[in-house]
Image (cartoon, rainbow, N blue to C red):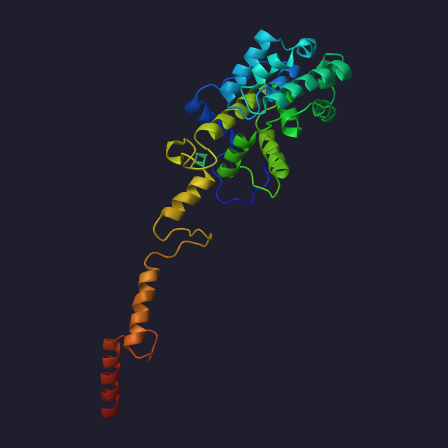
Amino acid sequence: MAASGESVLPSLRLTLGQAVKRLREHHGPPQPPPTSDPFELILLENVAYLAPPPRRRAAFELLKKTVGTSPAAILRATKKDLEKVTGHGILKGTFADKLRRCARIAAEDFGGDLGAALRQPVEAAKRALRAFPGIGEPGAEKILLFTGRHALLAPDSNALRVLVRLGLVREEKSYAKTYAAGRRAGEGLSAETGAVQEAHLLLQRHGQTLCRRSAPRCVECPLAEECAYARRERARRRPGGVRPNGKEPAVAGANQAARVRKRSVRSAGGASPYASGRGRRLRARSGRRHKRS
Ligand code: SF4
């Protein structure tokens, strides 16, 4: 695996394959998307803006049942019917228009069938998909993954957060660069699209449930022992552990020893950084003995 930053992160002890296996044991088999058709996957991205996954799925099922998912059916539908669907998310009017734009592009630029475009080499296939509203590079790669065309991990923001926290991917300054590192992290998984689909879904589910953006539930996580983020948090909370500024843990008892030394200096009138009152008396006595001899 050639994840960016893997070589510089300290004591990485979990591979992506091992993490996926544990996530499968913990979460169970993931639920695949409701379709593997490329145009329907594009619609799924646009059907309910910012809706949680169950509502997005419900919106897609409603579209299928009430309008249909062919470009022609969507172009025939009234805006009101489309808004009943897109109302599962926010900005229902805008997204009803986006569904229509998707249908128009599919009909006019691809003759209603995206199959030939997706059979092109990967970069050309991605370019074709990015012509649709709401489809950027991650979206295009996800569609190629779930149509079974290319085994690209295509981690969404939830999955990417898990990869970064585990220490399998280094967070870069831009999301695009971090995403590219996430894609590379998946290269060592398998050439089988089924295995990569499962990894994508399990990482996504983990990010949505336990490894949430704020307050991740590390105590319940099957990856906590090796997770770089959880290890840092444990070290930080340990008495004398790593400080928030990232400095090394203090040596146990070192602070107390420093305090004792300070007191000694004060009581010794600054004579010696290590002198105690008893030490001074002993040295004075030994000095007198030295003079007598
Ligand atoms: S241990 Fe915590 S931070 Fe690490 S993957 Fe699990 S939930 Fe996320």
